Image 1 (spheres, rainbow, N blue to C red):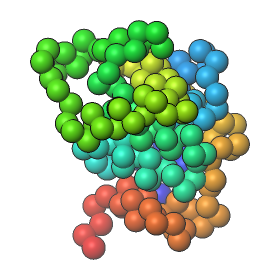
Image 2: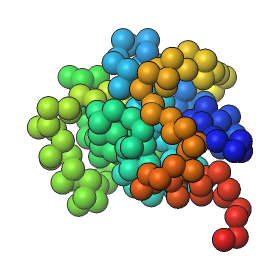
Image 3: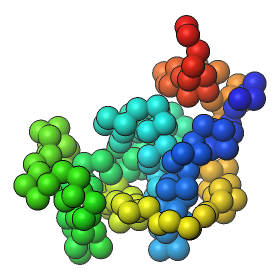
Length: 186
């Protein structure tokens, strides 16, 4: 990693395993005319999974919160809960992938249920809902999207610390350092 890593550096050097998925999601959001907050949320929503998979919406919102608009962090946070609840009017059907993975009778954990109940009546409900609508649950093989179309969205909406991600004094710098140096023994 460079001495002052940027979000683009993380995409290039730490997110390759997940980047095509989130790039495809952000590309769909852009094609569907979503706001820049939603496009950015789609671009970032699963990237924290290179660090941790459990409760990735919560972790991702925390990790990106100091650097993105509040609506973007909200969308990242609550996409995790909304993905378990169909909303056909908004264009979201429960994914077959989830039926196969969790079973027909799956009941989300209590914290997911509580978050869904809260967010479905929230003024920003559509932001995380649009992340689920533009998410690709069966990742499209053979489709490759570059980061280039999103550089201006990042530049306008991501507060890049001058010291570099992980070197700033934010409450989440440790998360960025852990991704920058995943094999660091200390």
